[in-house]
Amino acid sequence: VNAGELSDGESFWVVQPAGADARDGLQNPRVNHSAVAVSGGVMILGGDDLLASIDEPEIFLAGSPMGAGFFTMQIQAVHQEHSARRGLVAARLPSGVILYAGGESLSAFDRELLGTAEALQAEEGTLNAAFSAAAPIGQKLSFPAVTALPSGALLITGGLRPDAGGPVPSAGVWYYSP
Image 1: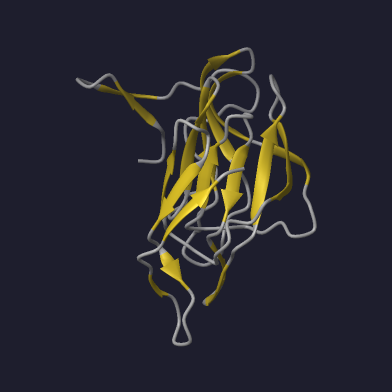
Image 2: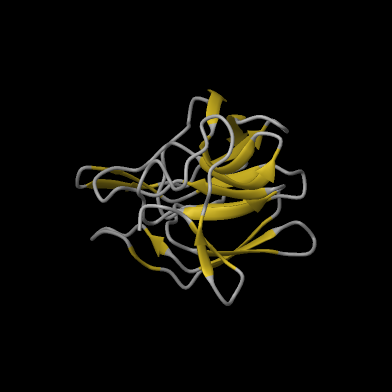
């Protein structure tokens, strides 16, 4: 299936794009990505195409002044340590920005675990967004589980961490308070 499908729990239907640049599915097929609920839709971040990390955030909008369907975000600015990531920590913070942290940079068959963090700020009512630096998560870590806590902090558990022989499973638990 190349098109996005919606369900009400009983049946499925294909996304019907509406508006300029709206699509019925993702522009970039991807695995190892994250999806974060945002106002009016879902932001799809990171991932890879089995050969390289993907650096093009996409958003699904259920119905907004811009339309409905899948759209590619227009990145207006990045900072010096910006990296395409797969297996990343992605969560919406109380401020509305999306934490985009850890993960791996994949290029062909080379992978590098990342410990840096970024904030993705989407401009309300547009498809414009920008990446800025954020406080690092404190570990090089990929493919963890992340949960937003009522306090606004994040609990990050497990994943892969670096080791001399390559990435190994982690039993670590980290508390990230932006």
